[in-house]
Structures are given as C-alpha cells and as structure tokens.
Amino acid sequence: MGDSFGNELSGSPFIGIMGLFCYALAKDKVHDEYFQRLRLESVIWTFALSVFLVMVLYLINPNLKIEAALLVELEVTGFLLIYFFKKRTYSVN
Image (cartoon, rainbow, N blue to C red; front, top):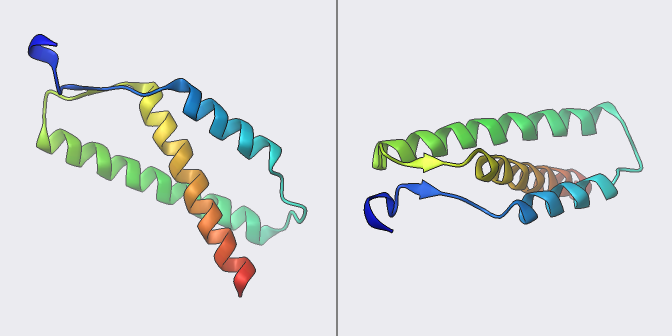
C-alpha cells in the first residue's frame, strides 16, 4: 500500500473480454444505415465520456495512474450500454 494507495486504478481483463465476446455473438439481423449511425454515435459518446471522466479524475487526483486495460474495459462497457439503450429506444418507437 504505502505511498501509491489510491493513486492507481486497475481492473479485471475478464470483464472486457466477456463484453467483447457477448457483443461479437449478438449480431443484428438487419444491417442498415441507421444501425451504423447508432454505432457511430455510441462510439462518439463513449469517447467523449471517457475523456471527460479521465479529465475529472486527474483534476481530483493529479497523481492518479489509470491502467490502459481498465480504460479499454470501461470504454467497451460504456459503448455496449449506450448502444443497447439507443437501439432499444429505436425499437420502441
């Protein structure tokens, strides 16, 4: 623990791998331009939110070290959640 306690964020690669595996198996039956647009918007939102989150975390604790694997896991999870809710909103309408 010592000096670095609270200055490092790490995650389990298992979560990210499982998320990618589930996404790879869940293919859309209809591949049209709208779903491509949904994916693009989801990627943009995910990127913007991850940049915002990292900036806020560094403002709170400038000595914070975030592992790249954790950031990728958070982005994959964020993308899946955003895409799911956008797609669900489309399906309801």
